[in-house]
Length: 565
Image (cartoon, rainbow, N blue to C red; front, side, top):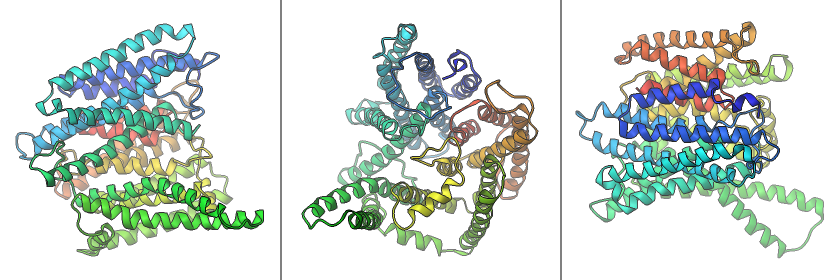
């Protein structure tokens, strides 16, 4: 890493500090103090990692991170806790008036503790690896960092013991600690199995996010099972969870189990094949490719048609999830079918147009990719206003399709594997690797996560638009204006310009003023001051200017958190 990244104060660290301070300032002290300590431990670790990386033998050299990116540990460790804390602050505004508010607040607070413990566990994992180094230059930083991590751990335990009485129960404490252990196992797997695909901060965000999501699924399952067995469940999940959320969780569960099912099926088939007759090598190779593809498609059908409905039935959805989706689509269907037709037209025209441009034109790839950000605005904005619930389902379906296509591409599943690879490779950049192409995932999730998290109570009408505004408009205008007209750069080593950032901030504020008028005509009332909105937009676009992390993943979450305050 560059020596500038090891300096105490960099542009990215300053923006992250202001972001975390803004969220912590609006939160109660008992919830803000752990966030502050977690951020301090993450900063100490990031400094230690940067200094160790500049030495001859880095203790983390076994983990190959994405070239050109800083460690990003501070940003990765504070983003999700800030998101959950901002959501808690937002939810606290309805506690006096909503009968179900206290139950939702208690569960969301438990998720805040879970994601904080997950981040702290990953930091401890990195600290442990750094302590294996014999580099004396990093010893002072390691001592302070280790002391900070121990202080964080003690503080977290104290806060847990002093929280509401339910957290004293062994089952809930074990559930929280499960998140920490699972996050460490998962980030170790990501860094080892997918080398050069992510930075430490990006891997931290992905691992803690997945553990939080599937931990929520586990809590929901346990709550339903225990409620059916007794009158009191150990873990209470809110009763306001929609059927759409259940369907999405079930489908994603099936798709994440699919690789395990596919690999096991291939191993069983290979064992059975050794018992049969040996064929020539050419015939064997061709047959294995066709058979492997057949095994993949069969595994996919088993996961979607058997595993998914088994789980959804367990948690209370008595109909088959795909039958439920069809019934939902064709009940009061005019608006939804019209929206689907609009989406199909926009997607077909844009894909055909941009793919031909990518093959024949000399247009810079960064500009070509930003055109897809504008397409995301055209696709998602009308749905957020007129069909918000249906958009939740559409986001889940699109993410499931992306997962399936990426599996087909990576495993070269016949007959689509080569075609999918050629198409997706036309829009890659330096942040994509030969193993994984993540740009389309990050763009989709960047737009989807603020919308999903805004389901239920939401007194900030602009919050669901956080991803669309920050990526589709702010990031796009900053890149295009900065690329064409930018002269003044934010740093000597970076390529982001002050003109581009100014254009991004101006365009997002202009888009917000237009959205406010449209939302007002639909019955929404803007309850957020323009000063607070300006701070949120400015910090988000400054992060886009300074960070070397995957901006599609971090900027929407940062912007969403600030909009919730």
